[in-house]
Image (cartoon, rainbow, N blue to C red; front, side):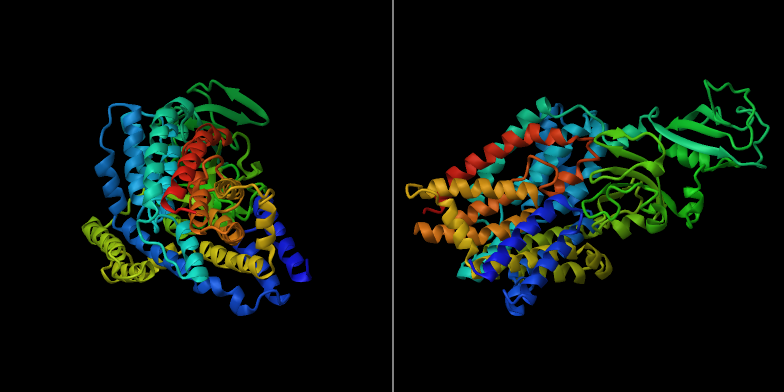
Length: 588
């Protein structure tokens, strides 16, 4: 093994370890690896930067704009409301969640679908009186399964298709994957309907926990010299609150419980209220009460411009494993955290002393533009106002849906390539004002595009240095191994890698190994390429492998083990069906 091969293998192992165990942003890790490959002369700049001009990457960028148009016009919400309806049982409710989410995910980015469906399913679950924890994880799984049915259903498919075109000149059609994807969706979807009511917990999400008016705690200080000093609790108007009630008073190091309405309030008393989230707003209107730690008072935002916001901490949040006070959260985001929920439970203790972790769901008071500002950022996976008032432009929903249908039909008929169809559709979304240029720009996730394009450099280095061939030879540990056994091995390794790192990076890194494996076996490369597409998307066992799994973590009140209960049988089922059908559709 020469220097270039050794360096490339070292870089690959280092990148994998950093992606799994560090909190460094994935795009920074892969960009740094690409830089090392260029500086060390393993790759020329043209070879290293080829990913940024790959048709798959450009197609994904166009699809962010298309998804933004569907979201801004309310097309996704309209379709969801049309199909959700009023089911009579839990299994029928699951079917109604799986059908629209899988259908929409087949034709648009599944992350956008799940982001749009989460608040709709939360409201719907409350209305039909089914625990939201029974519905949100199936929503994520259905979106993943639906994305495997078409070439445009998930960015992973587009990335692998781009690699295939660059390597062989072969391009997949819009519905080529449906021969495997649709049976996998139907069988795995049926399994979800049967198993989810049995194995998923009956647990409330963070919003429901905070709204069940005995769990949300608000502490306020009686301001010295304020108008309520010397008044009784009743005289201060604190006994007939709409959204909460006074439970304790902290006074000079002592705790007064079972507070009587005749107790006189003293300066610097800390009053402890329990109630719904709206109690924070209600109590803010009582003159003489101020936040004890000053965070809300220090927000440089007019009261009428504030709103309650729910956000899920993402893997690239800058303050992971720091306390809220250490992270300087308030000054950085101009938002005050009211409560933190982790694995379905509200965390007690001083807010400033809580160490934030990935998947934590925050209830904050922030400016009314916080949602639009951070919805498309990587700090948070999901950002939504609890009472969002900006209505979608439903009048343009038919235009957005029509644009999507025209794109699909034109591409499926072979009139234009998927790249050309997506660029035209994105242009139509902008020209028809389904989405503004500024909102379209905010919805293009540059960090995802950088991760994918930078991963291409590692894949190219693996091929150029011969490492892909060496790994493939290592997989062929016996001369008696059959192509079908090699396919199973390739699928399992890809599933393992995608559970640990991002699905797109897993696909890019495994693609050259699959091509080398097929070459050494002397068989067609297509079964191995298709297996990578399905295996890289088959991330059901942990919340880390796929972004939509992490998005429902807090809102569904889930714990890490909840994913394995449903995810393991689902992953096995999807794998068995895929591995049976792939060689039948694409023979060796």
